[in-house]
Length: 144
Image 1 (cartoon, rainbow, N blue to C red):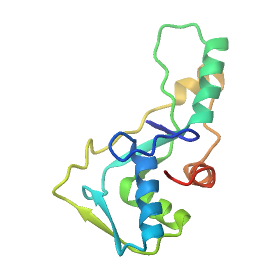
Image 2: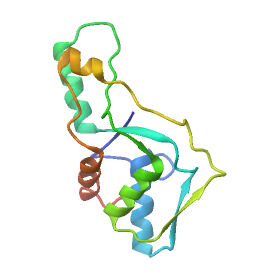
Image 3: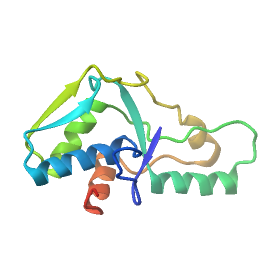
Image 4: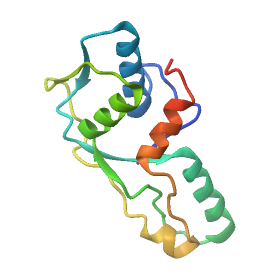
């Protein structure tokens, strides 16, 4: 899964997908651009975890989990990049078009993890939905 939240990196050359898409939509809105260019087809899916939920899980794991087995942390919420960009576009208030460049890679077709061991072993489940996390994330930045 991918982390996002406060202190994200918005540099388009080095950022991850959520801050990059926020910045693209924000800049397109500010410049009144007719469209935002997105790589791939938007069909790949990802799982995103709000950083505060991840921090809580790590504290609980340190306090309550002493086994050598790996534990996945995630939101349990899988979303296509296309749908993610539509949500970001809506939250930013950008009304222009989205153009998908299918000559660019989609990346791995799917990324989603089974978080049942985190719940069973130390009682953790992500609390922040993607929609709520995006609202908090955008409200806390100017996307630059």
